[in-house]
Amino acid sequence: MEFDVVGFLAGQSLIVIAGLGIAFLLLVFNKARLKSKAPKCPKCGLTMVTRIASKGKHEGKPFWGCPNHLKNGCTGFRKK
Ligand SMILES: [Zn+2]
Image 1 (cartoon, rainbow, N blue to C red):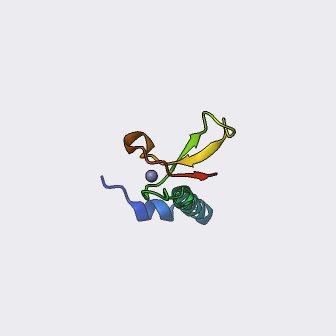
Image 2 (spheres, helix red, strand yellow; image 1 turned 45 degrees about the vertical axis):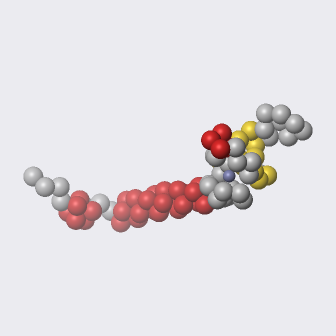
Image 3 (tube, rainbow, N blue to C red; image 1 turned 90 degrees about the horizontal axis):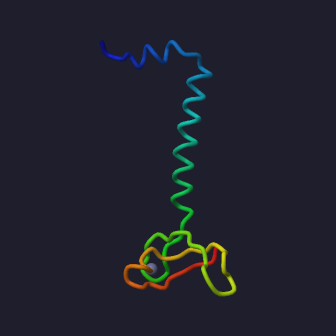
């Protein structure tokens, strides 16, 4: 037996369908927002990752670090 999507949706109230639509849109927008939030490394262009300073006067504070830092020593960073 095939699942009847149209029949399923027709059986639901408009509010349920609208709710599902809004939930889906929020999910998509939230993902896009999270993705675009991270800046690019000014030196190599990779999407940066959150790191916590382990020394210096900013110790314990988050900043944007380059994911290439451990691989090839890229020193690109940005303040959060
Ligand atoms: Zn970099």
